[in-house]
Amino acid sequence: MSVLEDEYQCKVCGYVYLPDAGDVESMIPPHTAWDAVASDWTCPICNAGKAFFVRNHTVTEWCIGQ
Image 1: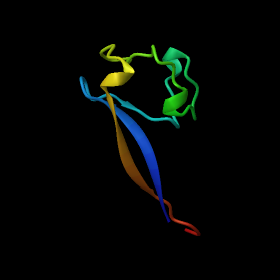
Image 2: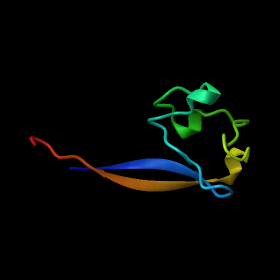
Image 3: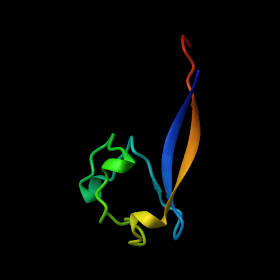
Image 4: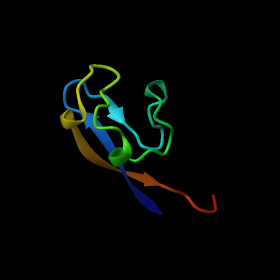
């Protein structure tokens, strides 16, 4: 089975925000959706704002019964 997941990549430095991981250093817990991240949050690497992030889709393959 394939699952489509969203991730958000900084156009400035390439950092990838993964909702499943959150950003613990910025006190954003795991499983925090991008829309729930505060508008004043900045990239932990280069300090770019959310406006500098683009949405990417990744496909995760799940093997059931193996």
